Length: 314
Picture 1 (tube, rainbow, N blue to C red):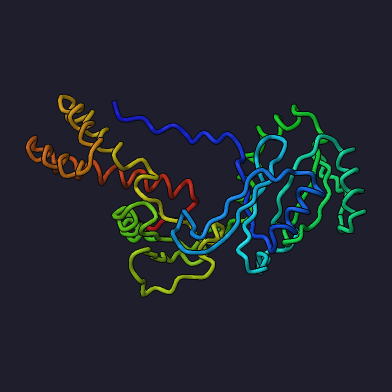
Picture 2 (picture 1 turned 120 degrees about the vertical axis):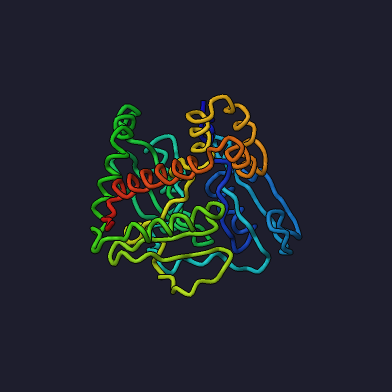
């Protein structure tokens, strides 16, 4: 049988959230002395482990009640992270949970006594919150739940449908049809490389396909808003449509059942497609494979277009 899909990633929870700070001691005073989060770990280094670049820093971690941390980088230059220029100040924030609304009220009193400007308590129905900025310009929310878990369980059942409705309301209809022949060329180009190496985007307003490559310059000007999913649709990679290894395994199961285990072994190693095509040539099934691949690719691509509400021509 075809290989099964890998198990989903199992995320246990938040380990830490990191932000840039202006001054490590100023930040320690705010989070440890004022908010009561103990300083749990300090890392000092001259080199960034993930990139190898030289940048002396201290990385400080403050532990929360569940063991997760809020962390900060002091780069030694007395500079805090700048606000996002295209985002309102109330959008980006971190929310820390307290045990009760009474604790939120007590935290508000403590912060105001320390001279911190506080907004709230704000009633979000499911939570009650206060808001303030730390010394580094990071907006912090302290919140407590105000509905039972059963309410949230029911809300979770509706969440995907509500998001889908929002997405649909924000998505303009296709203004002009897209040539299926052009789309097939874009799909082949995207699928030729590794995922994310080549990309193509369809404009919902004009139907034009824009080509983007991580390894080569494009003569086609790339719109600044091409990452806006309400205006552009990314052409899928063949793996997104289950047309990669699984398609070859499905073909082998149907057309070469006696060689299925051998084909499975091919796709556990490098050079799988070369060995697979050698087998097809020996078995005189290469042309049948090309026809099968083309038929299944067209079917999957047309189904994707229907699901994405792309108006096709041809």
